[in-house]
Image (cartoon, rainbow, N blue to C red; front, side):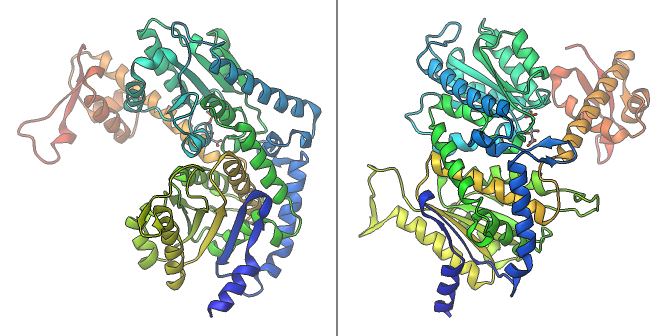
Length: 536
Ligand code: PA5
């Protein structure tokens, strides 16, 4: 039995020695004949990927090219102007970071920039956050912080952490569209914070955005230190190796050329035409087998390395935003996707891994193993005679993998030699391509995100309604009105969203909305409450 298993492991293992990379899918229960049955489809996906890389329109809804692969191999770009843009932007990013580090570019009053705040969301934040966490060290040139939401308390927390150093903090505002409200709000919160110190945002800020976007215009009008381009042929969730990710990483002092080289090397390996020798194709096929090509099982991502704890969050977006689609490319309703969650091992063994072992079998696990325990020169302290903490980490990984197999639960293991910029670039490139290939296996467009756009519109409707609620209250100052009365006066037929708006405004006294409860207060009385506007 165990010999068969070892043979199977050897047979299925994909090893890229130049990259220090292994992919093991031997613990996926491929049906007999699976690879033969899928052969034509995966070859077709690989052919389409070749066409995509050569400049075919791969995002049919939006009529856009998909060119994140050119970011690390500009010579492959289908047009000379794209190649020139990529090369010039990388040089500009590196030169800007060098000038900041050398204090040739410096803040209004402080001698040098010591910190950066990246303001962005989704694809404009998750990659930079992953790189900062995976590669950061006390030797970094600048300390990174992030605004990745429109949560005022979140802004306060970051500003509190920066404290007196705000005057030495560079704001990196990242938005491809340049119109994302969370990012605009974060930028305005920073603007206010600088102004409280008598400083200006422009003298401390740089933008990464599409040319001519709202943010681009704002940055030009407000004298930002620099503007870097984000092209329409790079999607948000595949933008880590564009200026979106490279600028924050270079400012932090990370080796962005190594990240690009790692991605380029993985791209080379994952262009292999033979599916079984191509790790991205093997990964996509393993997902297909595990999920029935219909998202029937969730992907649990378990890196046994603290530095990779944000990798599952990064993959969550890459996989779920790319694959989670209502319609396929022929317009048929398919409700596709693969749910992704995870954190890190062995930590999660003390949390949800209990369910993975013993509970509902609705997942497959991806273990990520890093062979090198820590940086050269660090001490391998023994925790028991002849045994180190790293031995335990490795033991927990292998033990859990085996325990899951024993319970009939499937898993994949990705192994890398050591954690560093090259490996991170390679991991990003591997998953970008696997997602693209899988999307073609299940016939969905991996490169649009209609659900994200719908969410943005829905929020705007609530903000507009809130404006009408304020108008309704201020039209009759001091008058106490019920939710239903306010909804009617606001021209809203459904009182529920009005109730939600009022409940929140009441919890924020500085907004001037007061709620009066009928006495004695009892269950249900909240729906008989009246609201009025007071001066604050
Ligand atoms: O991947 C995507 O397209 C999204 O997650 C975007 O990155 C996100 O909505 C932020 O958009 P923008 O960069 O335009 O501000």
